[in-house]
Amino acid sequence: MANLRVIKKDIVFLVNEVISDCWVYLQLNPECDQAPVEQIIADAVALGDQTFDKVNHAPKEGKKAYFREANKALLEGIDSLFERLSALKK
Image (cartoon, rainbow, N blue to C red; front, side, top):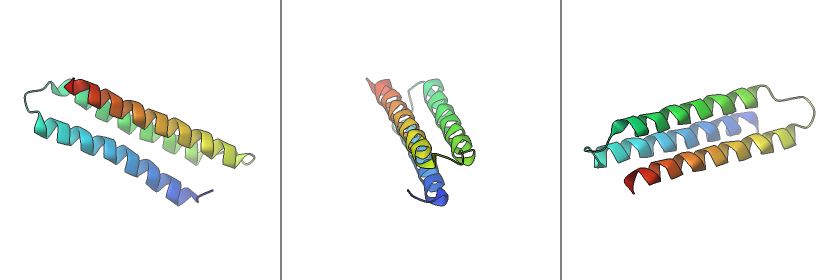
């Protein structure tokens, strides 16, 4: 299991990747409606905050399984945000 600092850095990295891709989308598509993209950014920030809260309040027993579940939820959330961003162009 990675230490807590590495886990938190991963959370920040993944959330920043979503936000970065949203900004690139907005720059490449200036004619598009910005509201859905802004909502994706807001949801990414909320997902990061929720995951930080989970990680900071880990139980004493069963940490490995708890962090594995938190990581799985984070990755699924990030994946759904990228899918929503991809669907905007279709």
